[in-house]
Each structure stands twice: as C-alpha cells, then as structure tokens.
Length: 193
Image (cartoon, rainbow, N blue to C red; front, side, top):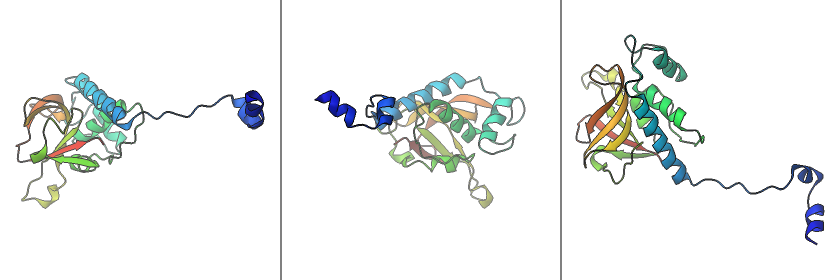
C-alpha cells in the first residue's frame, strides 16, 4: 500500500529528515517589483538623514565607500545607490550589476537600459536607476565621470523625481531632485529585469 511504498521507497536518511516538498520559487517579476518598492522606500527614508560632516565624508558615507573598496572623501552617489540596493535586496535576488563606485560603470552594467530618448513612465518603473554623464569633453581623463540616483516617481512624460546621494543644492546629502529626460547629460535608466 501507500505507507509500505513510501517507507521502502526511501533511504533511512530520507525517513529521518521527514517529508520534503518541492521548493516554490517566487516569480522573478514579482520579486523585482518588490525590490524596486523597497529601494524607493529606503531612499525616501534617507532624504535629509544622510548628510556630509566634511567634504564627501561622514561615518555613513565612509562605510558605503569602504563597502566598494574605496577610501573616504570621494564622490559617493554610486556608493549610495549600491548601499540602498544592498539593504533592499533581502531576498538575495541575483541582480547582476557591477559593484562599482563609478556611476556610469554601475548604470551601464544593467542588462536592460532604456535610453533617455526612449524613457517613459510606461517602460521605466519607480526604483529604476537613472544615470548621467558628467565628463568634460575637453578632458579625456574625465570620461568616466557620471552621476547616478534612484527613480522615485514620474511627474510627467519626460520629468521625474529622484532620490540621490552626493546631491542637493550643495551636493552634500541624500536629496530629492527634479530631473528631465531631455537633459543633454542624461544617459538613461538601468531597469531591473
């Protein structure tokens, strides 16, 4: 019968472990949507609460930079984005982006990038990662310079609000910024996929 088949069809180790059930993996789309929501919520909570105590430095900022293998007193917008992602990723989702203190390196490492000219509220959800070019064309050594943040929400078809580290009127805090896809320095969005 059923019990005899169950008993003799298993090893002693299986019997000691008890019944097993197949793992049910959560839908990646559902997991990524929840990750985006957590990213936005955490970055909102950080606005005005992470502030430099000296140029590009505070205990919290220095810890973010150290987590990326960087020393203190450096531009920290990308370190902030990575810190929020780390705190939000409680499901340990394989997100597949480069861990870099470089904003452009981080943004361009997404598997799915929506270019500025193609970005709309319909194809770029909150929690996506906008990034900009901050290089000086006259100085090739600045080609890696960029800026990066977190999309909080769209305010129009080409305008959006972000939560950004190393930002604000004096570039010294996590701040809410109003941005546009028509900014000539705006590259696009890294979108979770």
